[in-house]
Image 1 (tube, rainbow, N blue to C red):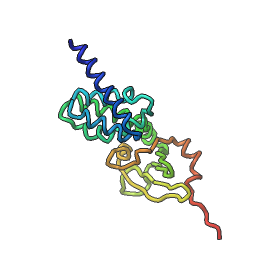
Image 2: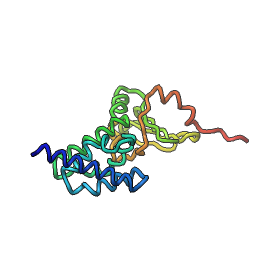
Image 3: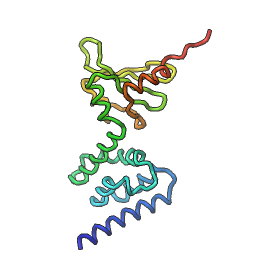
Image 4: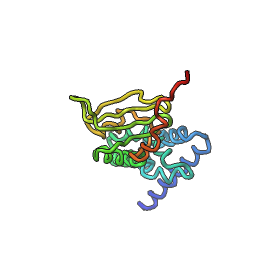
Length: 191
């Protein structure tokens, strides 16, 4: 009997995902509608997080995880431990896809490392300023040069949700930084 119930639940969430897909062209609205339909059913909510990759067929997995992450960050503290675990697993997978572990490891090895998000480049180095936190992340705008910087005690602090990296930010290694650095130098004005 239990196997039958699991199959019924799986069919139910698949049908919900397909139903809401036909109602919108926006991935965010699609994910929102599915989440709102299942969030009160703990089993379906857990399945949404655990099987998001296969439920949203034909859609970039990263985009699906990114859309679900809005809810998953909240549900990481869910009172149901299975939902919280599934939400945390989705966030961890998203962080791996964005390159957070690679970034942290590179910075701890003393390498330049960062993130690129459109016309913004985030470069992290060991801070050379006295009596400041250990690491500095400088933000560069394409064609303008440095526009801001932030100091933190650990590379993990730059990847936390509280830091505010854009959701489109992707890890970029030291070699990749050197290859594109000229694009982020200030453009010299004629005259």
